[in-house]
Image 1: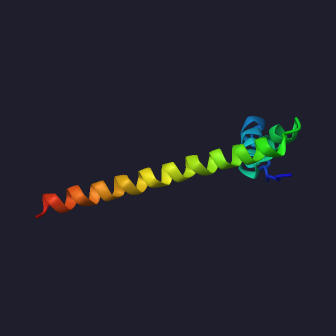
Image 2: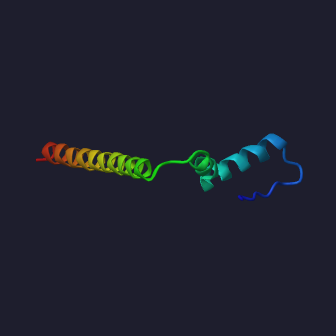
Length: 78
């Protein structure tokens, strides 16, 4: 459970916002949603594979954009 320190004269909504952010950072709500219902092992594998593919595509896109920027920068100064 995430813990936060609240200054003496701090407002409740500020403390609540800090606590929510700490919980989100710790992944508590996402874990709770995952274990709320049973998920078949094949569904877990499928979900994890889809996440890995999405991450790979995003990484490749960033690399491609970086190479394109480098190429255009190189062409500008040639």
